[in-house]
Amino acid sequence: MNEQEIIRLIGEALGVDPAQLSRESKAGDFEQWDSMGLLAILAQLDRQGVHFDPGNAVALQTMQGILEAFRQARKLD
Image (cartoon, rainbow, N blue to C red; front, side, top):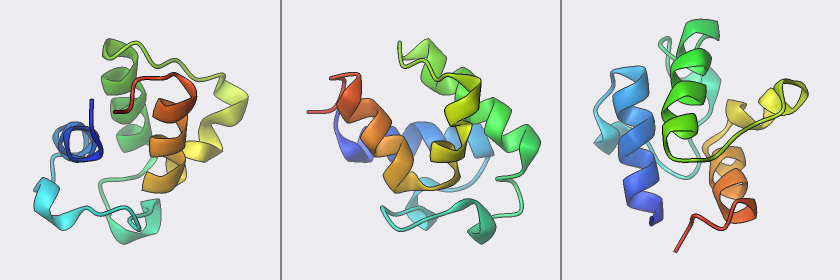
């Protein structure tokens, strides 16, 4: 899975056009990226086999954090 595919998945989870998202995107940039949006992101990532310790959910506040999680899970091409 490449970065653009991950960005597309996050866009779907948040209900925003993936074209609005970038590597620099963060939770404060989108009203949809709130606590419910975070749960949607977690669910989307879980479906891809990337699991987070709830204590590390702060990493999901930035696109960089999400991409790093994929790298650590060896799911990023």
